[in-house]
Image 1 (tube, rainbow, N blue to C red):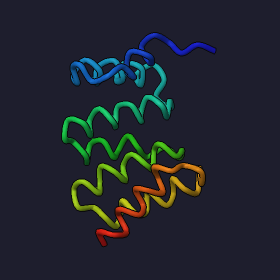
Image 2 (cartoon, helix red, strand yellow):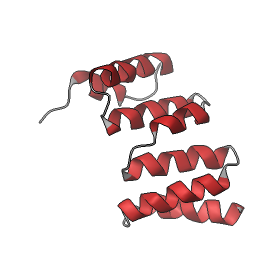
Image 3 (cartoon, rainbow, N blue to C red):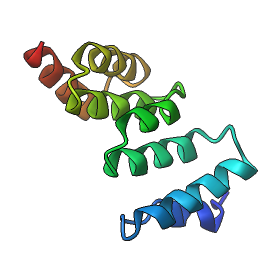
Length: 110
């Protein structure tokens, strides 16, 4: 089934972070349980340097939702929390190469 236009628009490259944030927020207003929309909003917030705010949107239980906060937390010296998220991402999707890479980086920093 095709995704609504607002979902596709929220996945576009970061041209204007506030526009992307507004689109994704609108999708969440219509469908608050959409993990992909939460993930997209988290990515947008993280790109704007708002890692703590971003992490709240990554609390969905799928591999992206754990891999992305691991990156955001590692960037702000949250290595222990990053390791926890990276490991959960690997439980959910053991073939995910970027989660293996991120876990290795976080463990090396510990």
